[in-house]
Figure (cartoon, rainbow, N blue to C red):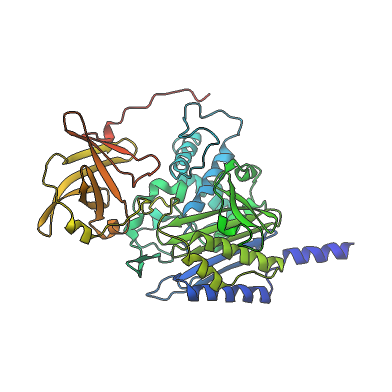
Length: 473
């Protein structure tokens, strides 16, 4: 019996076999060959053991520096799990802290993904910690340092050089181009939702911790895996299209989607940010964790397929698709409407160009000029700009800079007026007038399509009223 147990432990704790590593290597080579992804990193843990932390392809197309297990990538929305696990550690589910927060929709009527509320959890964590420690410091103290995740950091701390990072790429006018570092300015505000940078070696330590193998207590982690509500299904992976049960997004928990693969429970979450595409895939019944990240924003179904292939190799199953099949799956999915990306392009539909602007009716009135404010989204400024012989309205906020082309009435389409803005399609906007025909506000659906924010003319962000104080007891 002792011999049997020792043999079993040896098998369960062993690393990948040469045949398994070769199978994964060939799969990744095929995928990189047929896709536009310059490079990717893969981490695998099983039964508390790091089985793989490897890189494939290049981190930069100019230098051809190869990706390895320590190459940093922005892990985007997979940062959310750090936020919820931290909050779970700080709070008991029985403590009544939020008594005055009103839902956008009635309970159990719809699923709405949000970056804003995850960002709010960071503020809550800071207050629970006494109000003097930043969320970033809390993450380092509670997770990075105790778990030995010494390479992990936050994107804003690496700007502008993005030291140690794989260079992010995206398709611009049909050409693969490096994403400017300025695109990530302002991401610091979204750190709990999308601001962490990490690599395969560090994320293997994170996944082992989630699976109960870390050096620190994780008794509070399981509550973040518990499904809260039904989320949208993915028909692509429903039978008979796929030969096995493969549905990663049946339910949404706390920073995790809950689903199944080959009859086993899965907890997963993807992350998409300009030029980055990340996936964390946990199978608690098999004690398996898989992390992979690309320096190009690929299709969502592709990341699920990459994880499924690795699982098949680990289980000794015959994979039902190849790396080339993953490329084919990606070509059938629209990448331009990613509601999970806080720096996303707008779901507003048609993309307008400078050619459209030249054909539009120029606006020659001062009615619109001025500052407009929203106490959540801050201020935008409307001015005029003389452009190629015509005068147009110009909308600016932070690094955002857009010329406005008339659509008729008070509606306008927005054309990026600098390199960064030209890469973020915000679609259309409109002005509103009062009964005296005075312009009083503007609406920007590109900021949030489900609840388009209204900016009031003359309002300043620093004039926001002090919030009412309520007891949290």
